[in-house]
Length: 352
Ligand SMILES: NC(=O)c1ccc[n+]([C@@H]2O[C@H](COP(=O)([O-])OP(=O)(O)OC[C@H]3O[C@@H](n4cnc5c(N)ncnc54)[C@H](O)[C@@H]3O)[C@@H](O)[C@H]2O)c1
Image (cartoon, rainbow, N blue to C red; front, side, top):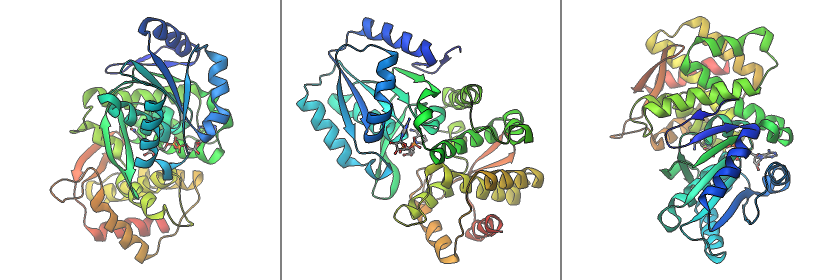
């Protein structure tokens, strides 16, 4: 599969990726190589990587897995490990893990000694199609997601769906939400493809992964710093993130993609109300999301609290909450302010 060219790096697929990495490591002559893993990818993915490529000298640095650990404590722990293990400015970090490993690892790379090189080898579907691409790094602040971070490109990304063999099914579905979102903001073809009955059992294949990455990469190439076009990637995320944050400490806790799936339905409903987003597409989206994810019921008290969390959304400016909506599939509208009443109605539509 041919590589995808991103702004300052390339995204390689399967064995081409490992060949490119071998060549790259020979030319770059890094003083030290650190493989950053979490507790699960240390067990499940490191041996897969080492079967694919010989890396003669490396150290592992390990974070605890899960969103709860995407915080400053994990960073301090990793900065200290790097320091103790003698990392210098010519050191390289290879992130082998999901979006949490990539986001933390990218962030510590961007800040350690004012910035060292890193490479992403994503091991979840979500990180393959989304988190590992586009150079955003970061950590959460309490329950508020991605409040601290940087734009800092990797030197290379390697996509190999072999890692998905050990990934829990619910995590695969979580990643699918971003593939589906990419289809909604890019154009009818992928959307029709994903929604067709023929493909109703397909969550991913190498072709869909590549298509999805291309959609994200093309947007980032136009607007890396999220001044306008990149905001489209937040479709479904304004309410999705608020729902994810709200449920973080509850027993109804959702995976990122599960929350985004709900956010997509809510944003599509609001799009329908404000921009005549076609009702047929809206209903198709809701049915599609319900066919993939379990339904969550929200009480009015919960909805009010979720709306309260929107004030922390990173897209806000001048105290205004900005939504990304759609006029139709593939046609985003940026920075729309939405009344609370319509947001509450969107939950009613989802709950029905
Ligand atoms: N930087 C960006 O542009 C961007 C974009 C989207 C999402 N994100 C972030 O990505 C994060 C979510 O990423 P995620 O869904 O990959 O979650 P994750 O990194 O928490 O991984 C999910 C779980 O799967 C485990 N795991 C990972 N790979 C495995 C494998 N191959 N086999 C078995 N277990 C494996 C992990 O240890 C973890 O327990 C969120 O923090 C989100 O904010 C970042």
